[in-house]
Image (cartoon, rainbow, N blue to C red; front, side):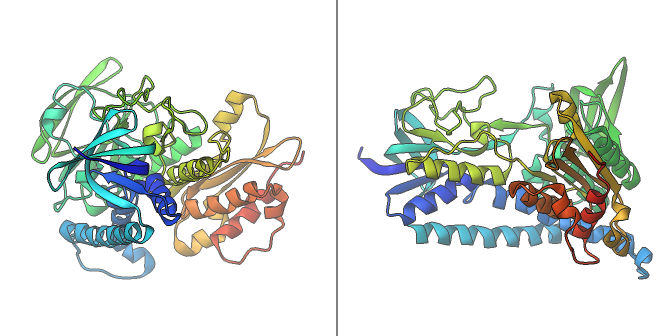
Length: 462
């Protein structure tokens, strides 16, 4: 069989992979990109953007429920989940069309199929349209991503549970949704489905939500769930799942010395991610894995095989689209002879509950664990006057300031548009601005960013 030769072969079209393909293709390099199913990767198809689309629909539903609060009388309303789904589908279709156009414009060749290594830098592709193709790259970049973890709990797989993919495609409203896992995906979709009208129960093995965040964050999320009628079952170990999701399911749960059964109609599994590294012949390529199945890479994202890189979540990078994009910049520059590394980079995040939880830099827990002294400034979101005009006063924002200088060590916000507020602080941190730069800034009134003046005015003196 003929072997097709390329300068670069990239597995996957996720965030980092696609930008690398487009960039190198435009440079005139012979680039092949192999994609199994989702052109553009998870983010525009089944994850970040679709979920935020559905979450916004849920926000609109919440405004209907609160309409009297804003002086607007309403009659009974109902949620049409098929229309929610169709709005999401239209957005996804538009995004995919943009991606296809970008591939064509870049000159990179998009090959739809499933690839397996047959040797170093050699791959056999089972084409979606039928047949096979053998490709070889002078350099290889692996960006196969991750998938929802389905653990070995007895009966879980047999219950045919929803993952985020199926949950975002629902054309009906679950009567009672059980969410297994209280992380990012679990919390976001739990709140959305509750606002659409489902009864929702979150079952999580940790003692508190967002257990890696400070206790005031966990308390704020717990209160949010309580106020919206989301039942929390914490410190829970599931020993058995009975039934079929979409009909009737039962979770046998142990909490300490007590046992109980949680019954619902639908089950969503949101309990972590598994790297897509099995069954693609990485051992034949000389690419080693970590104990957790991620591709072993150094700080330059180089694997254990010569001229083979890994990018994004399959490389164990923090599981954010914006980090995968930075992975692209690292590999792009290193391929051009640079020495860019993953170490020391900022990792901002935003949990898109309503209100949002966003953080950059250290939180109090991390500062205490590392022995980093800090000054704490903290205000309730109600002190930011814009929140009062919006009737969105839930939450708080806080900042950690160095004790010897005025450097900002970290910032956390649990409040309306928290991700946007956090971004302003991050830019200040990137620029090396002392907190006084924000404290003394003239910011527009009344805006949410104006609350940063209030926050940083409350920093204790050195």
